[in-house]
Length: 362
Image (cartoon, rainbow, N blue to C red; front, side, top):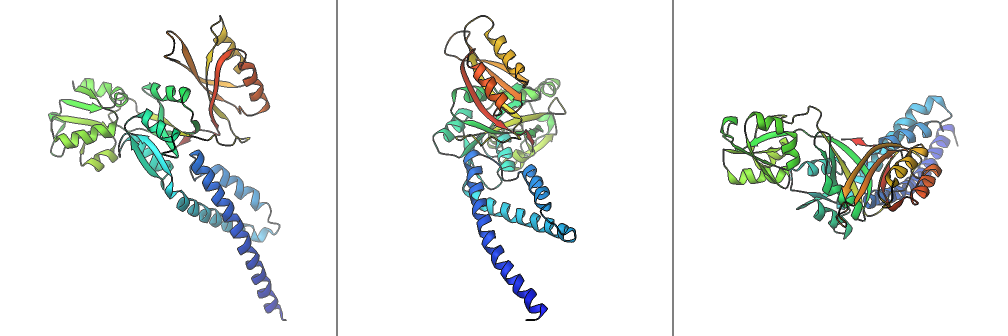
């Protein structure tokens, strides 16, 4: 056997072994896709990809081959994600509103292959995941200009789902009217109260009457169906295109940095990792003097940074409240577990809604 024949024999044997290992790898990718579907996680995980490339490149002993191997790895990652996209085509994601709502737009960005299922309100969308109709639900938890979405915080406390990711999306509000209408024609504006609040200065400056709607896309659809040139909706450019409306005025929200934070809720809690640096916790305190102060002190004593503390009425008792906490640090660490054990002593109810690595801008 000459050198060429030997080299080709080696290549054939290596290719055979690579085929076996590729099947093994893709079986593992299938498991990863199933996990992401169950826990409402997106396919793209750029931090994990960067870690994989860095670690695996170090395995290459021949420096001359390293750049080629990195390109091979990148292609392998792309193939793996393509396979995950196909597997997640059957995933169902609940959201509140109709097609064109900001929640729908965000859902499509996070889960481009999933089937997005509209529900009439936050509670109905949340319950759809609890009862197994959908795999996960995307709900807004806070707007940078107009504050918390209280109904969703209530669902987080009273419901059974876990928050497995928080995403920050820029919200651009536009004034939408029927074809042929002008800004001078508009007398009444219909939209979700959050959107109306975000655009209060603009609406007041133009002396426009307002009317509440379930969400921005519902408002846009209603304006399109009414065909009334004196009425307009506040919503996205996507909603205008979807319902055949025209944008009469762009970016009318009062704040130039208008973002909304959306949480993805699912029935299962994602596995904790050493990189987890955010957590969401809800609790009630015992009806004794200093209980709330003690709870806050415990969090700080264990080295966790309290980013947000918000109160909501429990609705069970008059003047009884639960507290929504967002913190920095790994709550699954030894220090985190010690903190939770100490909180049990001053909290009557304690719930970890979820933990994750960081918020993701989309």
